[in-house]
Length: 217
Ligand code: URA
Image (cartoon, rainbow, N blue to C red; front, side):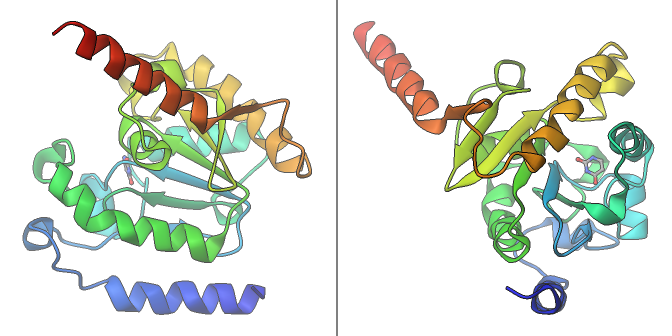
């Protein structure tokens, strides 16, 4: 897809969905937060859902977690306009509560379409919700972060959510280390085997778990 087409497509998609009323969050939101950055970014970062500041400004990661994200991007020589930042949910859950299954179900197609249009080389899923959605797993972020997966021919690297640093400052160092991998992955041609761990291994593990659980009865 030509760059112009991609930007145009993304804009058209925004106009198509910005007044969404598919779930209850549309009743309490101030602004729909589509996401932001370059339509032809090689790196996409996906968070959880807009918070208070994002809901007021209509932009992703503009609060405290956003400052941390900017610092991490800066540590590898990137600025926001070179990546695309989005969320699993486009509208703020009241009081910043966790996203609900039905909200994720209603909204996930928007993220999938954004990924299809932007066609990034690498998607960094930030935190549990985007990681579980894009890796199609129930596993926790702790065991997945910093590893690199290939799903539908796309490279996905789960990392901690930047907001985790606000509660646990030692997570900043872990995030810094994971960010260091980003450029290496993007610069590696098609050859990602050095980082690659096939999603099938996740599926195999969950099959094993199922087996174990069934064995209990
Ligand atoms: N946290 C998120 O997950 N997304 C935002 O946009 C802001 C904070």
